[in-house]
Length: 447
Image (cartoon, rainbow, N blue to C red; front, side, top):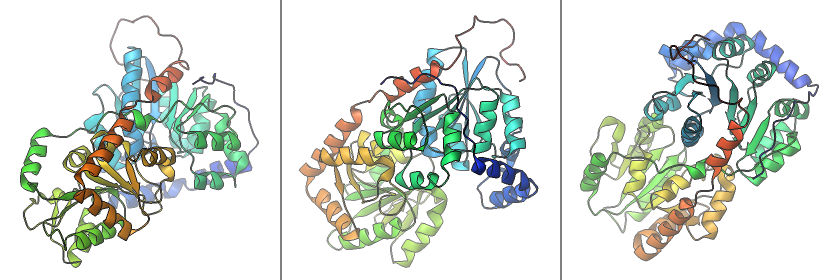
């Protein structure tokens, strides 16, 4: 990949951007009410609510600071190897990671190195964004995938802080939406010194929307290390399951759990000892999923409640955070959720790295190229509906040789690192000033 050189921003007059900035100023009085409502629904952390208004809860470290904004769980996990690469390359670098969800914040508390700072993403209000930037004074701002907050982008650019958009993803649906505001998106994209897309389709859409140059170094999610698992817990669950046939529905969304229940009911007629594992994309839905399954007459155990897997358990709901690696290790057959509903699918490489035979529905716009690669390599079965899913699961449960062959093919594809982390890190480091000589004094200084 030839990395695009940093470029100066061309300004496009944008009525849409001006209207947006005016509107966000106008809603300032109701923001505390909105935050309070979100807090009641468990969507905000009461102890860290001030961070949403740009009030820092950590001290800014002395030296160069790279600020990375990753919206949610998937994006934040994808940048962990990148953060390691950046901090290894330059010992004067510090990293601030912002994310927008309670779930991602909890996960990052477990996964981030101790020296990496985490804050909740600041709300996109001019007052809050100014407060955030004036305190942290980042030397480089890195945005991951496809979340654009206009006030924050403009304020960062106006402070002459280089902006990079990495692992950028623009779906066809998002592309059509942005085409309704061509001047606004062109204005925003013009402010990025570096734009790197995760696939060729996103690169083409970004250039059509106004990005002058777009690199394609590969997808960061393809370069990630295998998901971790607690070995003691893995052995305990294996002992509880024994030799029962089982399959996994991972990263499921509303509607897909009912499909999984239907599959279980169909297949358990011939396999009464079948165990179905469900890992919902959003663990907070565990109670509602359990209630739905029980109404269908299924015996359910919930991990969040500490329920044990017994011989009577039909469905085990893994409604906890950060344990997907555990369940991919338990199951050899994995249906990837978000593909039977209009979500666009989730990362297939996580299951592939842990030797699972893959099944996915027809909706895969988030990972179109990756799903096609797995399908073409005979590593993934694509299905269109519940009867086809039942047939695919039954086939893999019955034919051990086919299941092993598909799992091995998937693992081979996942093992081919595409070098995205290395190339992305190199491009980002080029936007930073040269490393300064070490200074004496304390490690931290107020910004």
